[in-house]
Length: 179
Image (cartoon, rainbow, N blue to C red; front, side, top):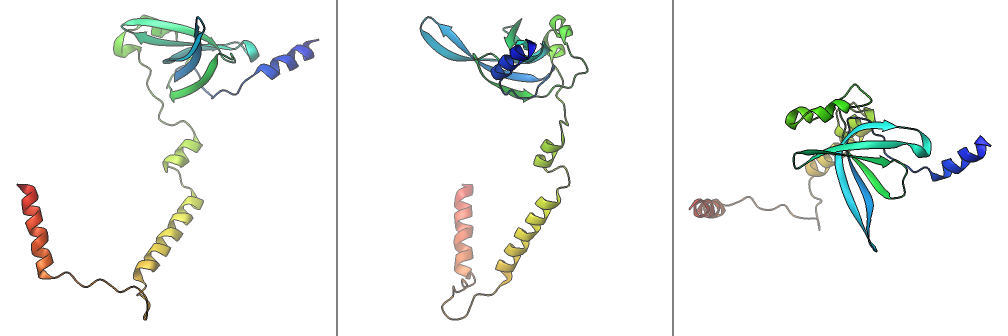
């Protein structure tokens, strides 16, 4: 019996980004007003995630005109169009109820600096041999193209060296630009 329920629930699960309490997220969800549908964005700090499977929910808190506003969303709801993780929070708790009692700068969550190896490689902070080899090859090819003299007979000719009159003209335009 429970396998039937589990299989039905598994079909309703959606792909969601990895986030946890303390992360700042933007939740794009559909609001129905009469006959119209529109997408509304709710951005704030995740203060908790609870439940599992189809019944999993998360609560987002934000400050709106000096008043704290919290909203709980079902994670796998069809009304949620997408969830964007704006920043990763540096917290040590699963539930951040203490933010309810704080106001202003004290209600902020510090952003996490290091989030994982894939982001470090993209930022160029971690040694990546394949990327370094490709960059070295590109630099060598560019240096060879610059050092190679033009072919004789029908190739491009080198530009003549600038004359004294060209230097005077550039100085005159620079003087005009300063005025």
